[in-house]
Length: 374
Image 1 (cartoon, helix red, strand yellow):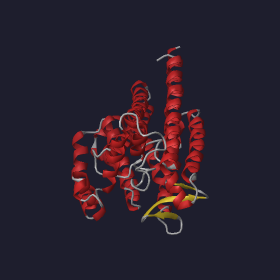
Image 2: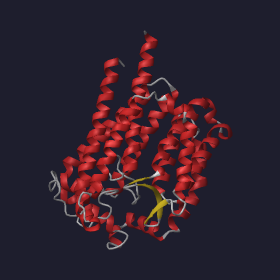
Image 3: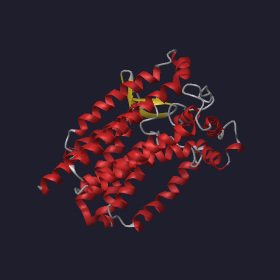
């Protein structure tokens, strides 16, 4: 690619991320204002926090885009140590903030940070670094596959204790996809799946509310006022939107009918208020962003940059696909946010840092390749 092409992709990547963030801020206010007024007597409660995180995220994205991506490989160990420390701190009573029985947040003044979100990026850097370093050894179970998944497993276990099954599953899937792309044997991945299947089954069906989610996925109308309630309300929101939607701020399901309207089910509100046109437009923006990420991964020559960009792209793409699939009833309900859109500062910040790293790879790896040709 020419210098102009690299700059063009970088500029387009930045613009799309900013547009998605702006849509997220707008929909956060639209979906949360009434709820925030009732609970906090402030209709702008969630809006103000998301805007603050948006500003922090844009600044972080710009700063990270100007830092050579290779620095992430050099300073991985301190980052990994910090991530594990934060994941432990969040479990300590009096330090971690507990909401609805889950210990996932560390409180900093008016803002909260979720260490599990940082773990996503840390694990991507770790796996990309190991694949690039081990190369063909990644095909060997004891010297390649097992050591990588052991560290991933430790991180996932700490997150499962919170509990945060959605994030743990996301990290696990990103790691498996990266290992497969890096040359890991399919039979090793299948063996891992077989070993984990009984644990996953026990984890899901030993908890009544998780078993209820599976039952609601199969037939939400079997228990419409309990386990099937949320997905039915999501259907009503999406169905009410029609082609062009009810108009921004005019949605009805967010008025205490649809649970988690400003977080996991914000796509339902967007579908109701902007209709099929708005929903498809948002999906198109994600498709373009993910496509750019794959282009960067395919055209870079540095192995670390290749797997780093691929991991970040999978992180954003996997969460977007999973969230929309859950909201539309294609998958059982699971707490996975819609990148850049759902309310949540930690998720927004980490995704924007990820976008900044993609921009850095374009700048430094692309520039290095061009200088070699000269």
